[in-house]
Image (tube, rainbow, N blue to C red; front, side, top):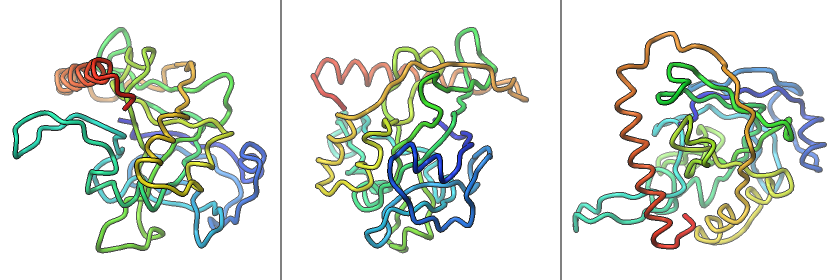
Length: 245
């Protein structure tokens, strides 16, 4: 899961890249910061029919820190595995359907628990994209429908072949030409889901060591390998069933 990323940009750069102007309510015009759990970060969303550059806490409330586009779950009633999509998950469905957001980032960081880079936190960028745009959602709860008071979550999906060397999931990236459509699109949850599948952007990443993890990851290696096995089983399920996600 992506629980850390960096943003180094300005309102002017965002507007130039996305070819539009924003109402900026952040109180800042430039950003140069690392974003970790429970910290504020800039994001773009619709507020009162305006495209707004605002802030949210990453992420709050739980689940931490990402929302999955789709997954295999055990049906408690039947005991059988079934495909569950994000718009059916109570924790995420309101945000996915009614409060999408777009999270700009310069790079993201993932800890590695297998392969030659075990014990390192790796930094992912691309040569082509000085800014990456991740599809996200506000963590709406029934008790608080005011999305400006909620945090946000990054949407993830299956890892690319390159990413599987380091991590079992990949954040859901959109190219600049389609990024704002994720926010402005009007449609059913299924239509929004299909839009993401159609426009998912999987670049070739430039990967560098961000740091050596302070604590030895031995206690988490087995846990993460289990997650990798589960993810590979899921990828095989999608392939066998001919399902995109």
